[in-house]
Image (tube, rainbow, N blue to C red; front, side, top):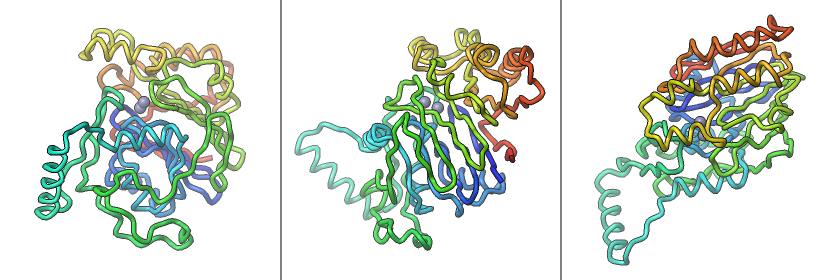
Length: 336
Ligand SMILES: [Zn+2]
Ligand SMILES: [Zn+2]
């Protein structure tokens, strides 16, 4: 059976579990590990059965709990190389300091380690993230995995992993993929494609398992021809419907942030999504899930009405069951 469970969607964290055959993968890990596990429990998904984590891009709302979750489960993480590098840069504070300042910092860190080994907090390098985002998971939560390596993963270097403080970028295993080059994780085939977004190398996916095709496209400023091409003949389409244009224009964000969200490398508006659904979309998916809704600049009702109106003109409307992914609770699992 194929199962598609959105654990969270929105600018405060994104994560979805896709299961097919004997394989389960987590697409993005944008909530803290603790919260991810809590949501999996709510959705009746067992974290211990996950085989891998796949990352779309390095913005905080997609990677916030990545290191801790991968370490705790002892599973590999799939990135593009540029995304992996950007993620590592984000976790490695870049500071210029004099030798004297450096010595002082070392002394301070040593004293902190003695006083309270796990209590420091990770510094957030906010310029790497989406503007409307979560704080970085604290190092207290990022303590090394207490669990032993699961059986069958003996090839992973889990014997003596560094602590988060020693190396916050350490992962049990890293695998690279490239946009445009399909690959497989167990029984799930993934076709990554480039999306226009202001990250190092952002991708969407078409995932296929047991003949079921699931399209995945959030965090994109517009829908270019290559993405339209990919989002065809799907059984399930998860598509961003980020903001209502008027709410964004009149909303609380500074002008620079509004400009960024509206730009060709920002996020899809309800109108842009509706435009796609009413024109380029082939109307074949059994489920259409609207995702990455902004809490500040959108209302679920507005996104829903815009998409419904767009789908009305489609011949196979009945097939397109419209759902809205939520920020604060998992969506019921969709089964095929
Ligand atoms: Zn993003
Ligand atoms: Zn995002």
